[in-house]
Image (tube, rainbow, N blue to C red; front, side, top):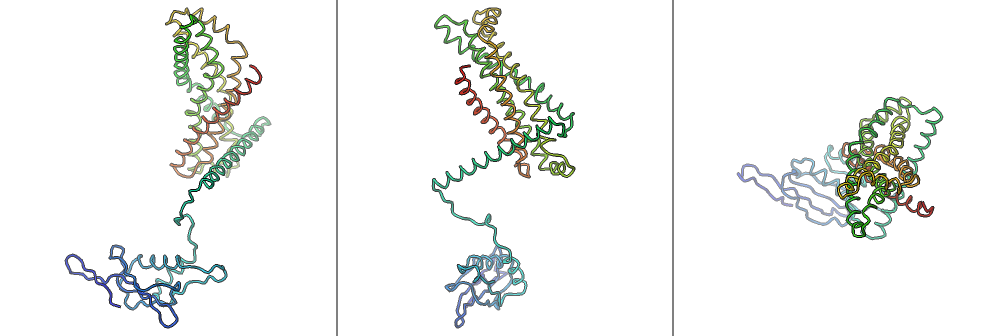
Amino acid sequence: MTAEISKNEDDSVIHPAPCVNWRRDGAELVLEISGDWKRDGPAVSVTGAADAGLPKSYQMEKLGTYDSTLPAFLLSLMRSAPQPADAKDKKFPPLDGLPESLRGLLSLALAVPEEAAGQTTPHDSSVIRKLGGVTMKIGESIRSLIDFTGQTVLSLGRFFTGKARFRPADFWLILQQCGVQALPIVSLISFLIGLILAFVGNVQLTNFGANLFVADLVGIAMVREMGVVMTAIIMSGRTGAAFAALIGSMKVNEEIDALRTFGFSPFDFLVLPRFLALVLMMPILTIYANLVGILGGMLVGAFVGIPPVLYWTETLTSVDLTNSSLGVIKSVFFGAAIAISGCMQGMKAGNSSAAVGEATTRAVVASITTVIVLDSVFAVIFTLLDV
């Protein structure tokens, strides 16, 4: 076989092009390799046909210099060769004729099975397969949620029996972060929600000469739905995301593993104080949000000619103890859902900074989704109970 010749632009250096020639020596298939195999060299020239699988031997007399290109080519050839259907018939491919360095390198590479993740496989785009994948992911998420909720309940049981261990200073710090430090954003959002409800209600009720009932509209809407839901959404984006980011960062830094090593339960030390703090503060924040929203509606009422005293009296008439307690009851469950979602995503985060960001995003989405689902369930229950 005559090897092709490649030249540099200045014609000063001549490199034989890499060539592969398949030929038969009697009944055996032989692979003849020649030329210089360089990563930035010319393309490989292949002659003959490998019609019988792997070669029985190699001829390397005309082989020049080579780098990793040659062992990569041989390894790809050996991995892509058809294998017997019966695993017992599979044999180590022959390496006769190869240089000693290549035989050792290929033996090590072939001794380790190729990772499935590194293989490119065609994706089945069938609708049934996609539906099955989505269903399995949903089932796994539900299973993880049930398991984490159960672990939280067990940790809560240890707390009431005096067996849970966490630092009281951490609990009071988290309580402050969930309560006092959340007041500014809760105040702003609740006040604006009250303003919006009052403006929209006044436009419609004025057509019937009943703009005084703006007080009823704002009061009932705030204490039953808007106050608790908006507070829960705020806490999902603010506190739930913070829980996920902090616990995820601790997992990346192996601090959670260190807690286990020292005999501390991560649920008791990390999840339990955050769960208790948010469950305790959500009803207080909800009551505060209701009052601020009613104040915003009162400001609009004063602007459209409803005296504040009359507005307040009408609000007290329409908002009874039953209505005002519904939002507070829901807030306890919303707080528990936000705490569990945030802590669970943090505990499930991967071991990289990017994984912490993804866990934070999942925590916000899961918290808000859970809050809306729970609110829908409560709406159905309250309707059936006629409250």
